[in-house]
Length: 481
Image (cartoon, rainbow, N blue to C red; front, side, top):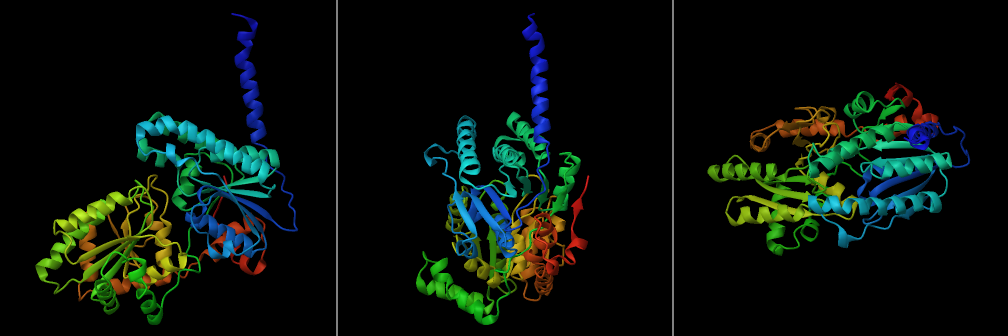
């Protein structure tokens, strides 16, 4: 064996050790006090990332400047579009002609997509974006976001904050299976690189526990629960009537005008109950549960001739890969006569104001989020509470009780049969349970994003507004390891 061969492993270990030591350096704590600059990075559609937009609005409120890096496929929050203190740096999208949802082709094309994203993200952060005091990165996706962000932050002396919405490996497992090699590699990648971030934000205490105990993160971990923004409000009778009158053009464009008007009037009178669910149409939401429950409910209405149970209008909002499959299943159920007394519509609202008003008009919200990791929480439920809307949701995961208090602001189901029974109990003519849950939702909705952000992230980013921070220091959930 040659000398060079003998020493090569030691040289590689030495170089890797130097790299890890360099990555472990803590960026300087010095700031430019003239105007705090924060880069917000979303390797996704900015317009469909409400939490990151709320971060931006909170930073603006405190006099900071935001550079927003991500894909720009949807409308942004009006307040972001209207200000000069947010600069949008749009990433070029991966060519749609070579995208796929088939697992076999996905494995072949994934490396090309990662290489494309590495280059476009690196170019934007390192060469086009100005240096910032902080970089706030949404994950998932963590590949390649964390690696590129970490490198740029070290080169530009910027402090990296990871905002954990979920774990990327758990979402990948929905596509490839828990035992797949790439899933294990993805988890190791997240665990290793996340340890070099300055601070971590996460959406649930359960997630903070995993970051501490399983990811072995020693940097501060702050739980920043999602809370409703000011857009989501309780509607008075006049506001509710005005928006319901708009439903025919927003949702019922494919229906006869007279039929649509009759449907709206039934909702106004309470003869038909309005249910709303919001989704990204991804694999972590099982809408077959909802359809099975509604088929059972329809049978109960038919058997009692509507004597005890009202008809339902169900509106499912959002866009994503599984929407067409759902619409086809609904059409088949209607053709088979299994959905009498129930109308199901899908919709997508470009305007967040219209979506907020829809929630304000509804009688019940439904969450089918099953949580790929078990420790994330669906933001749509928070929005529903902001509009005073009680929620029933799939709750067979650890973090769910942090959001929904059983029998107070919502109810939990773990099967289609349970969901169907809950709907019957809530909508019986003699039931008072829905009124009780609405009172709880109204109470929960009083806890707003601005106060939550000021008391947790405001101090982190150095926005020392004494008025908003006064009781924030008592409420911060620092996880100092």
